[in-house]
Amino acid sequence: MKAIVVLLISVLSLRGFRTAPGGSTLADSLAGSRWVSKVGEGCVDTLLFRTGGRIREYSCEVDEWYIGNFTVRGDTVIVTHFTQSEDGGGKERWRVRYLHCHDDIDQGDIHHPQEVLKAISHQGYWNGHWEKEESFQAPAYVFKRII
Image (cartoon, rainbow, N blue to C red):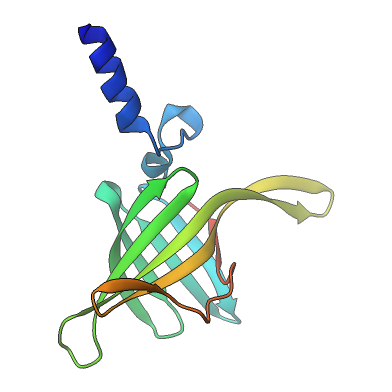
């Protein structure tokens, strides 16, 4: 009976986590990774995934670093950002959902899969609840893993 309970707890605790190469979870494989998205000429946004579900994001458009947390649900990486508001009071928050997948990159005669994160939704935290940003067009940003 103990074995069944332990097995059930193990299965439930792994639910929602995809296994990455080498047997680790996608969340584990993201820790320590660096992702970039070319926004324009000479402008590159960066995601730096840390251990413990932490993340830093650099936005080249506003030349600022943001801090946040990330979680993984299946093939979806959910990033929640925190930043000081413009007036210096309180916190603004937003949440972006990324689809983790592989795109074929064509380099002449060589085709190989590139690990990417595609932004699939964007929400802002307003008046105590999350609201979808209607102006968001998926996939607005595609980040490629470089480390």
